[in-house]
Length: 533
Image 1 (spheres, rainbow, N blue to C red):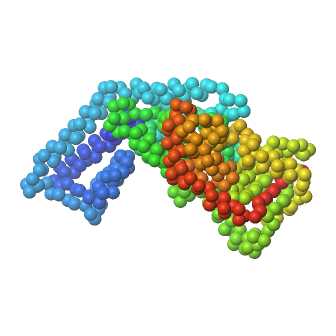
Image 2 (image 1 turned 90 degrees about the vertical axis):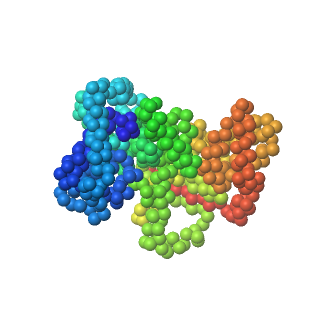
Image 3 (image 1 turned 180 degrees about the vertical axis):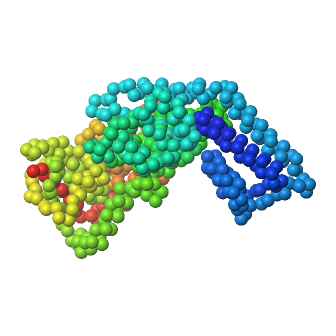
């Protein structure tokens, strides 16, 4: 109840009214029949559910009882003289009714519904944000407000509608076909541009749409309350931070946390942050969701969680590729069977709207790079590209015709991309976790002169060599390296972390992988040229 109170006065009032009604109906039933019904299976099914779900079950159960539909496992107690605590039982129910009525009276006396500081703050901040001019090259931001309670959504709708009118779309559990279409047209950047609308600036919704929708035309998620389960918050954030299409350079998460008194009782932030910490450590991803000081990006963590397609609505890229490969094996089994007979260097070209050369090379670890050029064939800049993005550029149908390709252009691109791979020319924009780890290792190996670091220099070189050439380290380990603080003041904690890594991996952990790599006689290179015209 306190959690609902911290969400909104409206959600709290609705719960109190629901409990008041149920207790009054129970008392009426007792007075009418002189009996009480206890359904143990019902209690076992609902005792650990959210308060909103419990209310739903109780209301449905009450309607069945009124209609004379008595469940099989219910227990009926005759409130006669043999029922020892008959009077106390009825007095307790009446006491609860009085308590709920007193709470409703006090809510009205305090006039909380017309003087709601939380809702007032929300309106003020939204008006300020809506008045801001878009950043150069970006569309105007839209805003998504989430609450885990439908009652809070309905309560906020009455307040916000006066301020934002028909510029606000509300989803209070009623996900109709027309509202689904409105979401697509107004908040989904991947929806066909000629069919997009700009009718709504604000989407107010329950967690009904925290999964399965692209809302990336919105640049800010507002969590009006914080669920105990942080995965729900991650799913909310994932609605605006979509892999498919980038809209804004920066995305924002705004959280309304409980009051100090409420937090002391329900500890929603503490519980959620503790669970988030466990997720960070288990998945090795980064996301600042509850706090700016939180070590871990929402996109990265959400992406990582998406890699369990059975549990969430989106399959991972790896799962998608495996499915497509298995389908190809069924259709073209002879082609797949002959892959091991292909030469180690393959070059091909196909038609495309952009001129670019994609190079994939593997000897130990696989790398992919892209080299763009204009229609006249002028040289472009080489860059590293992840395989997921590269895949869409090289994918083609079985009837795609091969074109002649440019030999000179390949060798120019290959040498430049090879330099990037070897760490000689990493673009400044590539500040990934991996690059941060390499920066830390480079500093510790080449610039740090502390005697405490000296015994670990060889181990640090192995870590760097693995990241650059072999790729055996887990994402979690790379993140640990990236998070090492290399300042003189933090040298002791840095040494402790390095020592811990060495104990876990072993002083010569890379030797086995290097030995295996020696057995690989040739480097595999696949080149795909996308040609315009």
